[in-house]
Length: 389
Image (cartoon, rainbow, N blue to C red; front, side):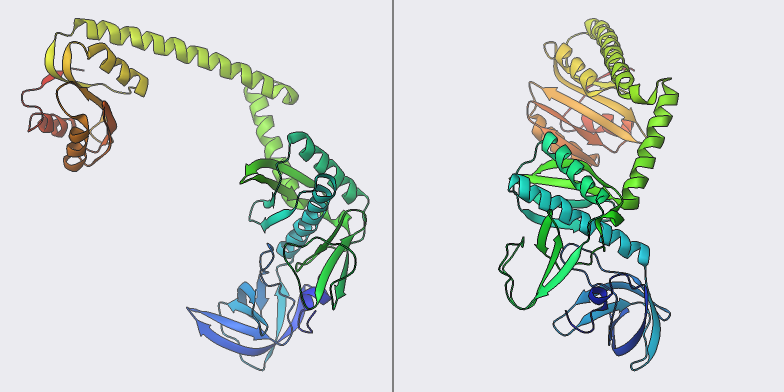
């Protein structure tokens, strides 16, 4: 621990006197170094602190070989001493999540032999990557044990060693020089460069909100403290709104929503069947032709395909368009006489479109119906038959 690193000596320090050693303009901002600082520089997955030095807003902090650089929006006078303050809510949130990560990673390593290979405190949640896949049951057990550690309100101790300690500890890489070790008895012993809480009880609550397969292992998404509380409030509010909307008890919402989903899918199938029947009646009345353009509003991809399938045997080239002159048209086209891949490329070029295909081409054009009809009367389709809406 270096003398100027107040964030290690006094991790709960919110305000301090800051003497400016240097101030250099860079890209519209100012790189400022202080004699001592309580601003934590970004590192090890923990974001940098923010706050103020005098009237200068600290937007980022990073460490160099020579010290800690504070990126500020205003210059400060070298040699002057200023009142400095840290955005404490932000720092405390980072400390809560960093200590929570130690608990979770320590438990996973101890029980399942998996190593923490990635850690990041993001704006909304924390991600922790492990080199082993974790099951849903294992994650629930990890979450339970981590919260038990919170309820025990265990001390979080930080020790410094001038050489590699004789006991085992977690570390992502080989370390040299002074080694900083964070210890939570019975749960974790790990090399760490971040700021930590004084006790596990300050975490408040640990909630693993998701786990996903990541590379050859797993990625855990975690929230704790006020983030977890706010997340719970948001989800509770959503459940209450859905509960009122569908006249269901909150603990029965999922069952009722599943039933509504199944009913909706059945109605969608019935509606699509009715639309297919209508398309079948329309296409049955259409006479054989070499070419045909069909314009119709609000066609789904399935309905467009139905037109193509129904007309393929009696129409050599069919192009189906759905949309309007203001927003453009989606299209599907197939042909037994024209290369639809070349046709799609020509449409894209002339009608501000995108898309393509081989046997059947599909895509979108930003053009009016008149422009589309004019195109099809050109080099590809002269004298095309146009089916009215």
